[in-house]
Length: 170
Image 1 (cartoon, rainbow, N blue to C red):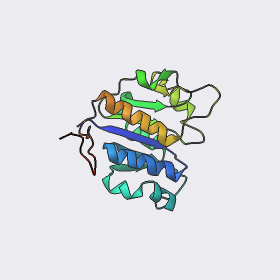
Image 2 (cartoon, one colour):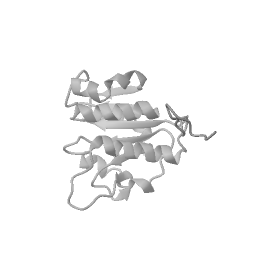
Image 3 (cartoon, helix red, strand yellow):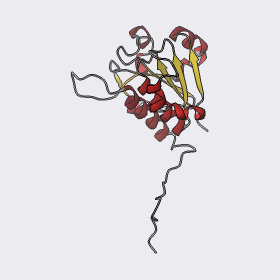
Image 4 (tube, one colour):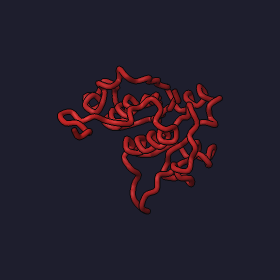
């Protein structure tokens, strides 16, 4: 199965991380949290937004962005950086197996020093000029599903079932 890694750098809002954890659980993506976090993992807001899904997660925590980058030094060519400052569109990127999608903190984004290291992989979601970025959990969902779409949604259910009725007519 293809591997997708979601990296949250210093997230501040527990509800966002809870929603992202739920997206990772539903899609099989790995979740990487880079400290410092703006909350405790046991935060009640995090629980309401998805902590009950954590048993389905492959989650790793790192003490700093420097530590994350050093730990994954051999994987830099598979890293993509989602930012409102990006010059390339997320939909133009070709996401390889075992890629890393990095997202910055809600109030600051990813450090510009990191972005200038990888300008061709600093990806933007198109938006109207002068507006703030989309919510972090929404941006992650867009990135996750674009990568999975490119991979033809490996090991995910592609058809749902009705609870009370049937799709087929008798």
